[in-house]
Image 1 (spheres, one colour):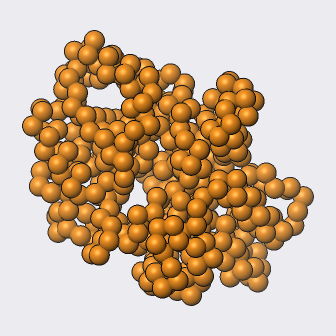
Image 2: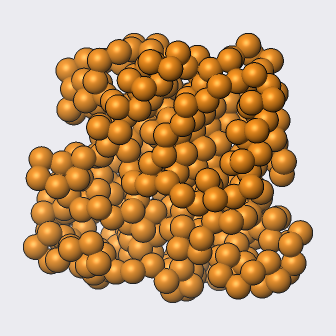
Amino acid sequence: MKTFTCARLPELRFGAGVFGELPALLSQLKFTRIAVVTGGRSFRETPYWTAFLGALGNAGIEAVDFSISHEPDPDFVNESTRAAVAAGSQAVVGIGGGSAIDGGKAVSALAGMGGRIEDYLEGVGTKKPDGRKLPFFAVPTTAGTGSEATKNAVISRTGDGGFKKSLRHVAFVPDVAIVDPELSLHCPADTTAATGLDAVTQLIEAYVSTGANPVTDALAESGLAAARRGFIPSLEGSREGADAAGGEEAFLEARSQMAYAAYLSGVCLATAGLGIVHGVASPMGARYPVPHGVVCGTLLPGSIRATVDRLKNVDGDATLEKYGAAAVLLGVDEQMQPIERCEAIVDLLERWLDAAQLPGLSKWGIDESGAREIAAATGGKTHPAELDGDDVARLIIDRL
């Protein structure tokens, strides 16, 4: 067995109703003033938000809150941090999807280190993060990015001179992750689709990554099995109501499976790394305002097809075996031959993509010329096969 390490993890509190425990936890830790970063609208329109603010007030905790309706950019982080510090915030809570959690993670870090967030971003700033931060509590309301389990926050500036870069330090792993699947019950169908496919992408890319190890393999396998149980019922329930998922109890169980899969996807990516889809997502997100989950979900089937085509003439290739194993975990007949399973996982994920009804990438202004520019800026990360610029351009163009 090869030598390997695993990334630091937060304290995890998982299960229906655990979000209600957060005000008491903050009080026990002697916090009296906190900053809260949420998504733009969906969570704030649920009873959970009102109940949370009321419970904070009852516990004697003052909160200054910020909302974000897009991926966090430097202006949001810098301005929110100044306000949080001015309010005397002692901790930060991020509640929402990946944008809210990354935004809260960055505010927590910048409040500890000072300066501007641009100073600390990889490939943008000249300062190295030193790990100082305010305590950070991550509360996902979607099942996708796994940011509640990772040490990095992705900060973007879109357009000319744009970038999509990470703020990264092992100390920036959330102190506590509160994963309550009840919070995702009101998640819209388009968000459910994109975030769910993001989680599946992260699980598969980490599973076949050149940085995978026995621990991440075990977690990815568990996460993929959970996604098989949860993705379609969650999507159908979000569109047609709980009855479409078998009733309220079954719908909550489907959401629980996806919340679990998403958390594990974050754990896996933090250690094993990711592949060509995420290699595309970075330059694409820097140039165009495409939601990250849409990029991942729409490119995943084609990326597997291209990789299998590149490797299928290699006898006993371990990557093909892993794609085949992932296929079985997602519901493909295990009696198929290995290469047949590799083809079947592409077919299955294309059916999931059809069910997700994600728009084509041209919606955000990407054309063939833009696709080739993105491909030229794409890195392979820890992808198990080398795909050249033409391969990547075709992958994007096929999804315009």
